[in-house]
Length: 151
Ligand code: FES
Ligand code: FES
Image (cartoon, rainbow, N blue to C red; front, side, top):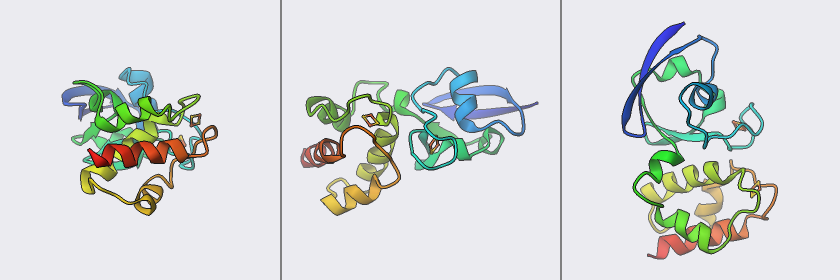
């Protein structure tokens, strides 16, 4: 076991981790952060996405021990002071059905809109290409991002 300290959603958090524990498992099981989901556990679905130093990464593919001293933001952090624009448009447009993919989609769109506040449809599709949704056919999700980017 080794102690790591990360900046998680603007708070310094220390936790003991095993060398083989993934960031996803540590966030969910040891730090009580439940928005990242385990859809596939092998990097295929994007449901476990978090922002690591501002970049979207798949937390099931990263060892927690590697993130010592780094900054991690999850959906809990994004919505700490109220829902973001794109979360609101996703709600208004009923962008999700089961919602399992939603945290990963929100992480990807937050990264996209941070870099490119007015993306076109192709850019939105590209940004979401690593996030799988089994329910919606993607259209309402893409429309929500377009709507948020107009404001
Ligand atoms: S659970 Fe990490 S990509 Fe699917
Ligand atoms: S809303 Fe169900 S997986 Fe996307």
